[in-house]
Image (cartoon, rainbow, N blue to C red):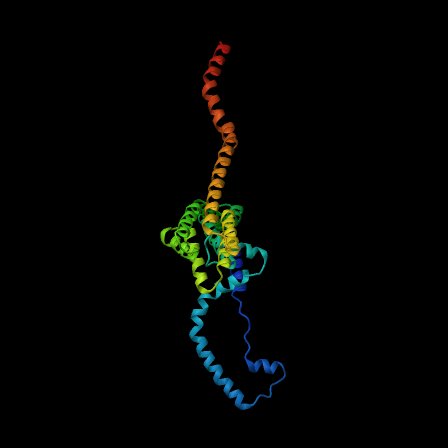
Length: 313
């Protein structure tokens, strides 16, 4: 009896959410609006024309009903989460930085909600099948809903970190290729095209997008700044800022690229040295709590056993 009540409560909550999201706004025709405003004296000819138009509209609506009914729930779900705020802007930048350029913050929130509901429904079904206690039947679906709602954010952060690491790793080599191409007599746009042809990876794709935006008519400086803003990598932002400044002042691109490549390699070397110096500090915790106790047991264990035998005799 108690399991039936809990299951009915979950079903009631799910169908209430479904009813709220799938609620339709009342659509009034022109004649009803005129009548509500007190303008019921419409000519007969206009009424006949409106009836014909309404019949045609009904036929077209009947044809498109099936297509709209399939996507209506997801559209309302996305609209329910599409609110302009700083959080949505930040989520949009995070999605772009992760390489998910076709996603918006509203779609990401809808995905998190749907994933959490799927986890919760699966957990509820599992708890009923295994006949868990009442509290676990309530807590386990809630816990799985929270996990399904939070897990995509952890995956997104790991994707952003992986993408930034690849940009930092491949940036000096790509700058060297651009520098050699510029010093060989090519223009900066042709040098970027050479990078797209010869290299593969995130930066090659970003340079390809920059070239496409330039072909559309966007200024090169704005396209490069947008690339730096989307990826949010400090070294890449510094390189693009120096390139834009050199373009404005008329300085040779080859010298700027050579200096930037040397500075990026120096920073990468410094980051590696810093990580190597932090390693002993990070190793202290596992050494103290896991390695040293086992060493003490192995070394002092036989001696302690012998001492106890001697004292016992």
